[in-house]
Image 1: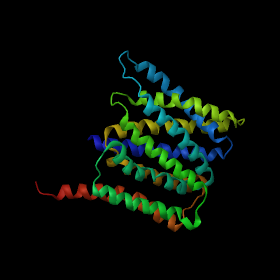
Image 2: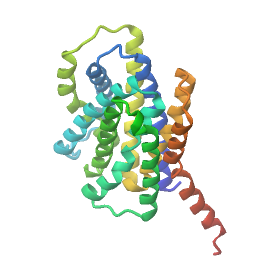
Image 3: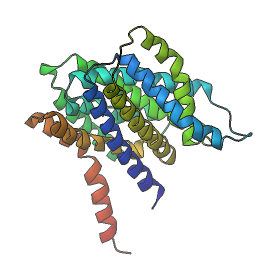
Image 4: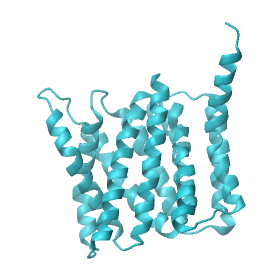
Length: 286
């Protein structure tokens, strides 16, 4: 299996897990405060990653890039906080359609921050996807929580693009551990201001969400280190299929026709480019 295909599969599976995390957040039903959830999620991520990090740590490990790691850590706090608000007040499919503006934003960010060059096919596909996002949002029926969903999209885009600024020698566990650790002081301080008593069920959903997000982040770090951001960013859209199905199954959130059209436009660029390109290569004479 080539590197590009492996990165794509990792990102698609990661989006399945991220979708399950969204389900867990919605099942919390606003019973924990926003930053209480964020702090507990990051604490769980730290505790899970720590044994793997210290077991594999070597004396000559590369130094932590404190600046980029700190920026990414605090992007998690902002993005996760916005995500909780958006998922609580919007249908899963609608919130995630806006979240998936993130890969669209990654394209200009990749040019600006990473000096990457983009292929015309990617630009066209992204325009189609962004049209889908606008259809889902429907400005005439704009809900205030969509602003928070856009905040998540921007945070995710920066979070993933900046992973390419980290030293290539850093392992996935190294990146996850330090990103989680650095996010704890600020998220913990914010959580203290609005701490809510929680039952076992609420802690279970937070744990489930945390583990799913941790796995997604690990797969995303792996994928974006293996391939250029603009080459695999469209694979992020696969999560829209998952959240739409989960929304119907768990919450009886039946998307209307316009929402489905928007989601199809967002997901559509994933299929034809790779399928048609593969078909062309098969028919091309040797």
